[in-house]
Length: 333
Image (cartoon, rainbow, N blue to C red; front, side, top):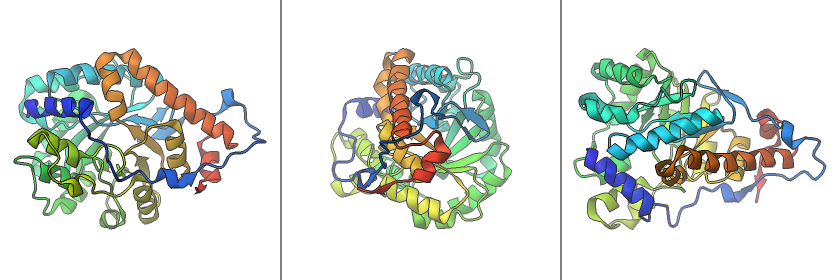
């Protein structure tokens, strides 16, 4: 598994892993521009509460990696940036921690991000009540504030010896979300959660849902490149629910549930549109991978540009804070 984790990093750095024909759908909407805004750019407020923690901006560093030697460097640079900027961070899948104490060290970041919102991560296919003690230990080991459960049937189907039996997973998710000591968030990995999946979550005691839509990194592409060195099924590699569509469908089906918009969020304008459409926060992953290998300063620089652009977006549409941005909303492009 450690070798595969390292291959994931290499492929995501250099391979054609982005969707080629599917976009996020955010380009179909525009943020209204207000030439007579009554805001002051320096006083635009981006702070928000999410999963019980105060964030300086509505932003999470998305789940990326763990388990490989390089993963430790990546995660520590990401965590340092999250701490400095007051944003949240999702860890990569902690499954490898369950039986590999050495690999567990690549997830150890709490010492350099003592106050940051830190979200652990495990796959839905591995989720079960008997696994709860090991899961709780893994979350406690890293000092996580919450747990992200990732559902990824398409990704697993592309892997050699992937976990392809999702039978009963909805019931297990309900049970674990009701039992775990940590708040639980369900997320996809980049192929989208839409209306059908959201309908199955009605009544589930989830703290949040990350729609993780199509339009950014296609993990069906990543896994084919890791497994074969090429894309053998283009149609599967391009399959998913665009991020904007996923966000609208989930917000309609699960009103009142906190939402994360991720999947191809690449700019402050993307973030502003997603927030105006109902997301509570946004998450960014792949654009931070190369900076995270370089240094924490490189991650901070990328994120600061993103946050600065988001602030200008609020100012330019006449919104002094996130609540006002949601009142502004978006318009068809």
